Image (cartoon, rainbow, N blue to C red; front, top):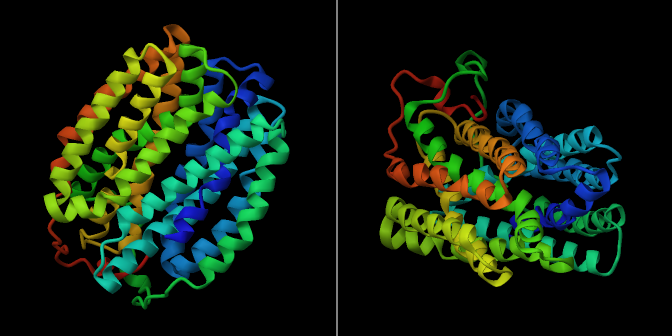
Length: 385
């Protein structure tokens, strides 16, 4: 839980600086949207290889090595001198994130299976607290006048040694050694059961990506917010995501994964509608908070469902889930940016409503029964996609 908390702090410090970088580079909404594609592109290009690698080296080693690379890369966007440099810098951030975040999710699943305790949504709750703390630190440093190219490296340097100490004492669980003859191609198609889970989480991650990339822009352009206020939208969103995730394991025990997902999906739709009609910053912050509650448990519930399918190794299914889910981050920000370019930011944010509705309709896909495929020797091979 502590390593989940530490991982996103430096990235959270970057989010309030996006309007500052946009202004410095002279980018419009569409131009910024294209530049922001770098992060999901880097992640998507790396994830097909991250699954097998994490399966071979183990989740703890993936977290240790990934954290070092990520801490070096996360500062690069603040130094971008043009849109292409910003795109490439964010690609490197996304590539390093794929290893450390996949390692985190596989580790949490291993702890659940090894101890019999539900910790997935709570662990993601600590992640949300971490990114909220990071965004608050970023807003505070911006308010103090510290330039982004000083502030973000400072945060990364402080967090890295703490993270390495914590990651080094994570428990290790024995897995069966890979058998080369049982492996199949990394490009093999996922099962229908896994695809249903992936499409469920698509709208969730698209919304999370939109909040990360556009919440500050929305407050500034649609409502005229200034200064530290522009970063509060994401801070409120992240705080309520954390609150929802801390209660997610309890809700899952009481109502089941499907009903929990449906309750939260309805809240997300209400929050998106409220954000669209909000007349002032206060109402918008309420909307951000409701959306945060609504999307809070979607991804951790999907990770548990995908890891429990049993048709192949958990690391392989989680890697595929992460790959497809990251398409939400890939599609969401540019779609909102292009719509905002031709209409306005409110209409851009309204694009979240139909995809959240699809996620709500697919919540039933989380009712997964563990049914290992017949004649599937790769099911027990860690890291095989």
